[in-house]
Length: 377
Image (cartoon, rainbow, N blue to C red; front, side, top):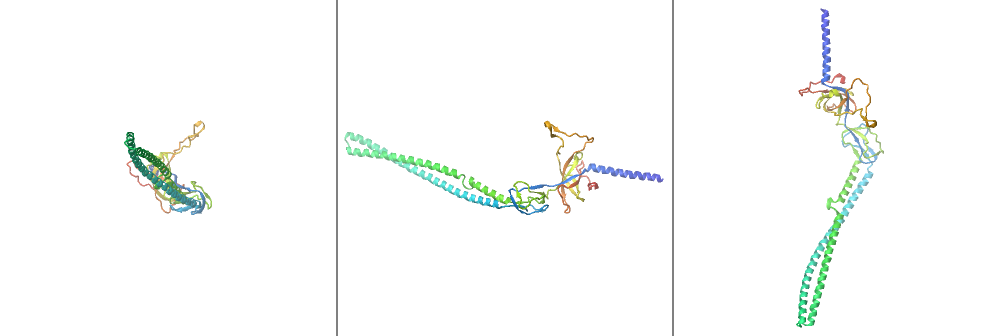
């Protein structure tokens, strides 16, 4: 009897152990997890927009800063001088444009005056033509009469003289008309030249816009001497010193965006097929093993780099020989968004994390909550 009880107890223990192992295996299959995870964040490479010696360093390494806080300042004196010069150039350009506008106005007035002179000259020509026609008619009639002896020679001479004067007056009037027309052409050319020198009027003038752009550039360059934080974050790898030379567009320090943390979990390719965006995840940081975090799968990587296949001799792929009998599954990055991070947990880029994903059932419902296994901790 006692032996039977012992056998039954032993069998029960074995069955319970087997059930526990089976449950753990099912749990692992249904909820993939990995110890190969890392904390990531957007790292901003802070680079100045202008060059110059650093005259003020407002932060220390690993300091937290808010967006808009001053990080460091470059000597502004050169850029203040450039700004003053740009202001002077803008004032000079405005004065030049006023002179050019005055020249356009003068040329326009001269053109209008030449038009009036042409009208007057044209009227004088018409009057002279009428007078010349009348004088010619009188002369023709006097010529016939003097031949018949109906008028005296003296009267004929007066008519002939009047005819010559009328013709001379017509020639003078026509000459004045030609001069007025020539003056108008010259005034038109002068107006065209003045308008070409001026360019577009008002604020659309190219010279004025160029001077304004130069002024705006000088103002921006002066503002760029103060390098400020673009995001809330932590100053990292600060190697700047007062007096050191900052070079435009060359990174001077790194800024870890405090609002951009996520976790990359690297899962075996055999497990990726069961993971979908939107799945709940449990993240355990090696630095905080007793404070598991919750998250949601954002996305799954679509490619990983190949160790083999680089171009070798004769442009053929360079494949290293392998002597492994077992094929190792590749690891694919899975991006996990962190939902809530307790205040006592301080995230740091590059630190190690373990990730467990609670996969969905075939019906689309979330599987039952699965606590983070001790192995993740």
